[in-house]
Image: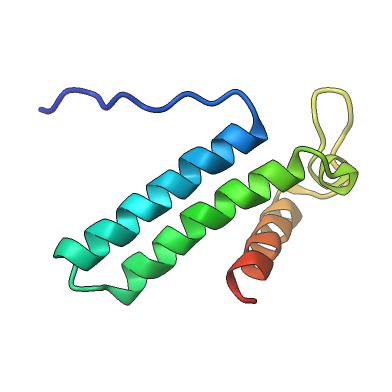
Length: 96
């Protein structure tokens, strides 16, 4: 069994976006080098970057707090609707 990976730390939405952008870039590089330029791997790399961008944006969006809730506010969407909303936000970033 391999040793656990040292995961990068982040302290803000901006830093999380940087981590995800870095992971996306590494996956794109691995895809070119040894994954035979897989279309699936390309989309996964794009998704990683979009997750970082979305998380950063969500930190300052009051509509996200309203939809998803937090420790002080009940979510206005149920769990299934939250998943739908998250996927829709990611889709908007992925399909431009």
